[in-house]
Image 1 (cartoon, rainbow, N blue to C red):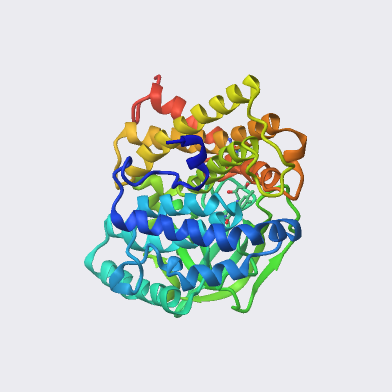
Image 2: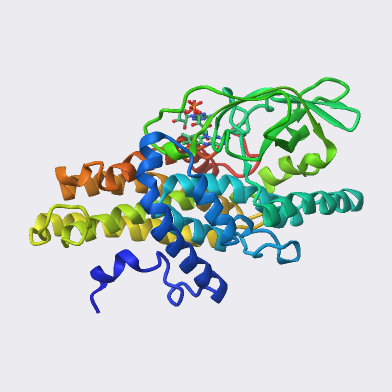
Length: 420
Ligand SMILES: Cc1cc2nc3c(=O)[nH]c(=O)nc-3n(C[C@H](O)[C@H](O)[C@H](O)COP(=O)(O)OP(=O)(O)OC[C@H]3O[C@@H](n4cnc5c(N)ncnc54)[C@H](O)[C@@H]3O)c2cc1C
């Protein structure tokens, strides 16, 4: 069997080798086909125009994939964390920007679903949450509603160092939300903005424990999309700013009960690893491109094979080794996602995030160096993969530097240990 020839169209994770379930194999196959046939041909246009791929979202809804992590009892596909991650990586191979925004959307359902199920709530909160999440799930599964996750602000709140500056002031029937979010993927294109805000307690002290996770209707009075969007990469995410000024949000807008986001952030850390599948898919795409290009099989590339030089063969070998390393670590970590992971699993999650984000851009860099000048023309996807992959290590809360910091500290200090 010629493995090199098989690589570009094969699943990133072979179902037999990685012992995947039938559901996982089927969903990966469905995603690969949808993204390859529909999203890939549209990707260059959305990248050039920095426009949102609305038609991809219609296709995702028609395929049931907007509801991938919604429980079957609520009309979804009932996929778990690992399944979502495997499917997202396949989508990213063909359109990184769609995979990245789809992550924001799917996480809204994963956090309200499986992750909330694993966390502590009293009976009243659990009953209320069950009723409320049914509203969100129905909107998505039945009506195709799109949810965004605008958390980032121009401060250290998204990385968990200070409370969110966006404030939710309790009023009769709900809250009044005021604040500003930056880099809000899907802005102007989501139906609901699932934002994190600090509930202003009667004593007035802002605390991270009082973080609320609220679905603000995009058309609510007081919501504005502002700022330009003309970045280096991930242009199809349309991540502009969102401004909220005294926006009334009813109690049923809560995607998680009060206090549960704070609990999730500390007890379910893999919730922040969900941006990595996009970049694993981009890493695979850079490798696939290189193999195809050097074999003379890349549509739109100059004719002829370019594989006979030992230098190119060595470069492909180096890329393959880096890809295998990132894939294996990523797969292991994604398989370990759970409530209260061990310290070792937690550190491995940071390592997986760091490796995936850095490897994606490294492989894109090596792909251009190895394939050469003709490979980076805008008529081919490689230069877009290169630009999109550059964004991975910037993704809060687990940016590359923060992962390094936490791995170093976590390896040298036990929980609560100091040098005093
Ligand atoms: C394409 C794209 C889409 C995005 N989509 C979303 C979205 O949908 N929702 C959302 O909430 N956010 C989103 N973000 C925002 C992203 O998660 C970051 O919040 C954002 O990139 C921060 O930009 P900044 O200019 O404030 O950089 P900074 O956060 O200041 O980062 C600059 C550098 O400082 C480092 N750094 C920052 N804080 C610390 C720290 N505490 N300790 C150590 N090092 C630190 C970083 O690692 C980085 O190297 C998106 C960003 C991009 C590029």
